[in-house]
Image 1 (cartoon, rainbow over the protein chains, first blue to last red):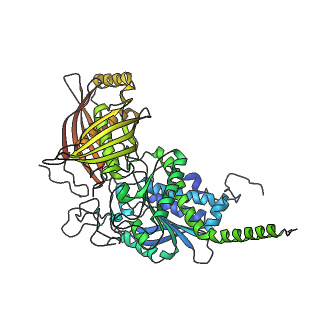
Image 2 (image 1 turned 90 degrees about the vertical axis):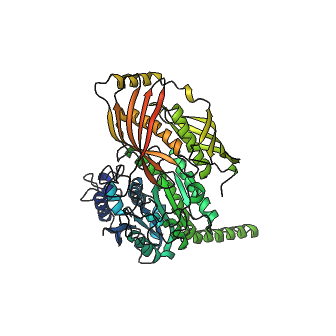
Image 3 (image 1 turned 60 degrees about the vertical axis):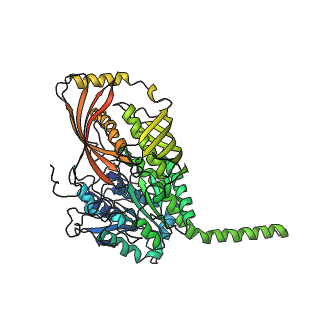
Length: 357
Length: 231
């Protein structure tokens, strides 16, 4: 069938509306309503692989949603978790989640490897976890550098907000936090006191055996952080986390030459407890990473829009390195065994001189 | 708990000390057309100096951000211990640092500041989207240099400072050959994650460079709805 006009996707299917990839500018920062609309559009454009899941509410009663991306096989599937925007001011993070979704959907159309991955695993991507905070950071010039959520402080406190990345039930309150409600690292009144942390805890926690990897996206610093934030704890698979992390950093460097440092938080940045990454690892999710995206301090949280594309491209490369490793470790074992069996048989045939034909 | 002896160059102790060197270099050599950024730490060493404090020796690479050149520096940072809060002491030698000639650009900018009919002023550099108007970039650079003096003074082994934003910079009239500015900057301290507000008064001229005349931390309750009481 010869295409009559430009309204076609890569597979040659005629579409009666513009696909979201053509119109949506992934290299500009978008306010929350635009991101919400974008999520709806992605589901409309890829109904066979994308659904929305509402999995919680923010303090200000906004729905927390993720995009679940993968082929529906009718069976229970392994999964990848990605969240962006735990910290409101880190605008490059939600931008990356949106770019990531676009990239995997594009790859799904053309790349056999991604098609295989979509069959085997589901991607759960939360573009903005701390919606209240993100919206607040868009309010005016004085709110741009807001970090925490928007829950009020405990009784008698002048300040609002809890640092969601200190609020998870992971050696909570032990180090690198403040119990002063005015602090930017106030860990909350108790572990998972915050509705946003509860949403992740419940959703991921009730499916924890399914998750192969848990990626949480932040800025800035150009770091890949591995568990644990408390230096008294070492992950049982520390060597694997480091090795895969270093591979991801190599993949990142190959895109635009940027160096990302890999290590535990206490080694390369600072000690801290209660992070979502540490909570995920304690649930048994083997590959848990915090990405700290560009830059190294010259622009910091206010990364220029002309850097969104290179920042996302390199981060995508790093994330896919980890995801591919996680996937192949789980799904290529069978393939590897079959190949070994075939090779053994061929060698045996060679030794005995038996001809195959 | 403090690392002593040879340091892992990618770990935070060497990185924090190296950032202090960046602030020192910008304070000393920074200008509207010369801005230095820590690119890499190659090696580091730390030792306790009795009755003085802790001394770091570092080999680093520094990037001149405007001309995009890189060079190596050797530096020493002493974080003092003892009575009173004292600033770190830095010594650094960089091979090529002063060789790039910015004189023509600096003279042109100086002339612009001096002869302009109205006094210059700008807000929110960069803006929420990371954008800075090209004409405003020299003011942003000057603010980073002036802020570096504050960041140098305030740094300890437990801090990592970057300038997040210039809230406001205003040119003031002068009777002499200096150009003078009043600015309000927001500094980001990485370890506490706090945004700290400072007011700076500084002068600049091509021969003299940036000189900070006054610096004052502003009380700011960053997450209060109501502004705090100011005396």
